[in-house]
Length: 247
Image (cartoon, rainbow, N blue to C red; front, side, top):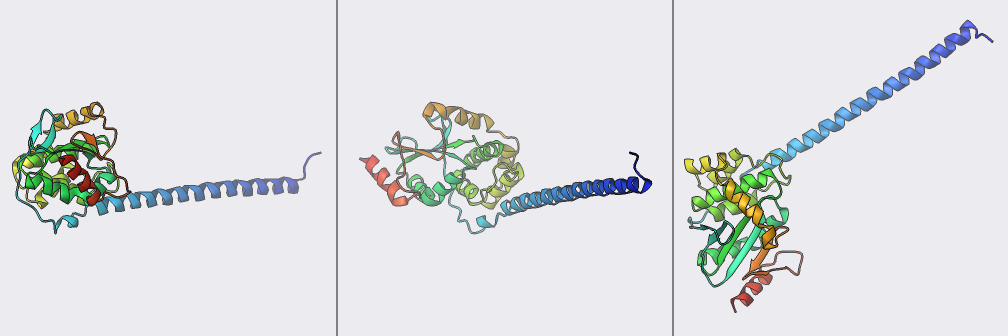
């Protein structure tokens, strides 16, 4: 039976109403998506701004330069006091948050071993966490060439970004970090910008598997892997292992 004009008009109004509701929900959803996206971008930008704060380096006490060598026998590690009776191999990635904890807990003790000449210490700068790990490792080699590896190493962990590969360890920022600890030579800046030590970084990366290293930090004391027994990196526990290795 044909609908009356009034019924047809009602149906048209209902359809229009339903269409308006659909349109309204689409608009609301799009606005919500824009707001969420904006919040994420703002949060990410905020993280980046935080990571570009170098104030943690303002009070850093810089020590005298100390010579290291690039050791072929240690797969291009940066080595101090080669030939000392006690040997410590440290595998690390500068973006690794657990490596930062290792540095906080044991860094000063390891530096004492280096500067006192009482141990051969080999630093293997791994770079498996991405491009910024590779840039930081390259810059660390550049700093070693200037005699400032230990201080640069310490500085990188002091300002380590909480977000991996977020753009913090750009060549410019790595040069700024070097400047903060007194590396102001043009040779350092050129070395960082030109990625001059990339072949060394690659060799260290390639040597991880053959040395049985599948994560960082990994530490060998006289060829034996050191495993902590507590959640933190405790100086007394590590020193005990070192003293035992001395015989």
